[in-house]
Length: 273
Image (cartoon, rainbow, N blue to C red; front, side, top):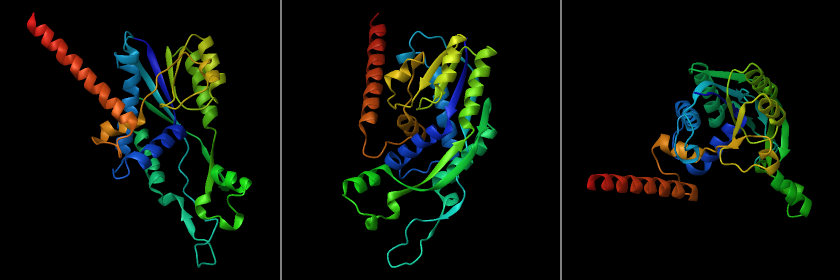
């Protein structure tokens, strides 16, 4: 069996998870154990599934999971604006934010997870910045400076050292011929130089953008796309239906029913023989 390394851009992965929790699983209690289960679902999606888009492909052996991230923001800062009737802005404690607490708990779980290497970078915070939508409204005159509220700002945080660690691991895995396949879970083009080197060394380089669209230019530098649905994965783990039954869930349900129907027909056909 071909050895496969799964490399996960933690910032990208957690942003996707956060989006689906906020939009489709608001009433569900999500724990670090759920996220560990989700991670293993993704691993099995790439190594064990033999049907669908993987039809005809041999099962693959997991070499190791590499998870790249930085610690969640744990500082306390002043909000940009005071609340109505107040003279000074309140403090915002990022450490108490539910998603930051979940992220820290997830990191702790990863440290004790088999065949998993946690690659931690450093967090570099800057300051409050206006979000893109607000900037556009200010430029077009739809909003005035005096109308701004705390909802128009976000606190910018950058990861430092994560991309370097990821690039180094891709290079070592490829040049030392430790694996045959590298699966990268990411959504940007920062990895392209390392991916080129991996392909030169004969490694099959697969991108999993978690259903996010990627550019044609990016597609040129990989050997294939195998995209996993975070929404479906969470729904299966939580054993619940997503809020408002989105189109991607209805499509998934239709596929499941089609498979069941096909299985019933095959069974009925075999019984007639």
